[in-house]
Amino acid sequence: MKRSFRAMFYTPYFLWLALFVIAPVGLIFYYSFFNIRHQFTFDNYATFFSSGTYLTMTANSVLYAFLITLISLVISYPMALVISRLRHRDLWILLVILPTWINLLLKAYAFIGLLSHDGLVNQLFGLVGIPTQHMLFTDASFILVASYIQIPFMILPIYNSLTDISDSYIKASHDLGATNWQTLTKVIFPMTMPGVKSGIQIVFIPSLSLFMLSRLIGGNKIITLGTAVEEHFLTTMNWGMGSTIGVVLIIAMVIAMMLTNTQRKRRRQA
Image (tube, rainbow, N blue to C red; front, side, top):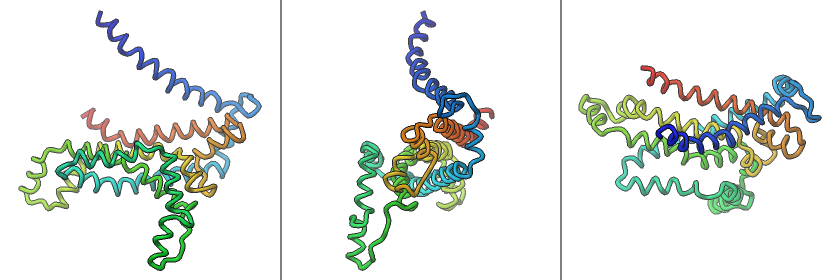
C-alpha cells in the first residue's frame, strides 16, 4: 500500500522531469551532432572551439554574467541586511519582489524610454545643464538593466539566510568585544554564505544566456552565446550549431553550480 502510494506521489514529478527537462536536453545533445544538411558530424564542436568568434562570444558571455552577478551582489547584500533589521520587513521584502511580477519585455521597454536620446534621464540632465548622453545600446546600459532585473533574485536567498541567524550569535560577538564591522565580516557574512551562493547561482546562470535584453538594450553591439543560439535557430536555421552552443552553455552552468556547491558538500560530508 505504501509503495503504491509513493509511486502515485512521485509519478507526476518524474513524468514532468522526463518530458520537460531530460527530453529537451537530450534533443539538444542529439541535434548538436548534425550539420545544416542533417548529416552526422563532429564539425560543430570543432568549429566552435577553433573559431575566434565563438570563443570571444563565450568570454563576453562569462564576463557580462560575472559583472551582472557582482553588481547584483554588491547592491543586494546591504539591502537584504537592512531589510532584515527593519520592523516591517515582510512588507519591504514584498516591495522588492513586486517588480518580478512585471513582464520582462515591459521592463525592457520602460528602460528604453528612460535611457533613450529624448528619454526622462536626458531630460533631467538638461534641467541641470548636463549635455545629452548616449546611454542606450551600450555595454553599461545592458549591464545596468540586467542587474536591476536580477537584484530581487539575489536579495531573496540572502535575506532568508540573514533571518535564519539567531540574535544570540550577534550578541555573543559584541560581548566578546567585536566591533560591528568584525561581527559582519566574521560572523554574519560566513553564516549567510549558503544564501550568497544560491543567489550567485540564480543570477549568474540565467545571465550567461541572456538574449532579449542584449537585443533591446544593447542593440546589435552586444553579442552573447544566447544571442548566437537565437540567430542559429531562428535566422540561419542551423540547429546543429545552435544546439552545440546550447550544450556549451549547459556545461558552463553545471560548472557554475558545482563551484558554488563545493562548500555545502563539504559540510554535509563533515
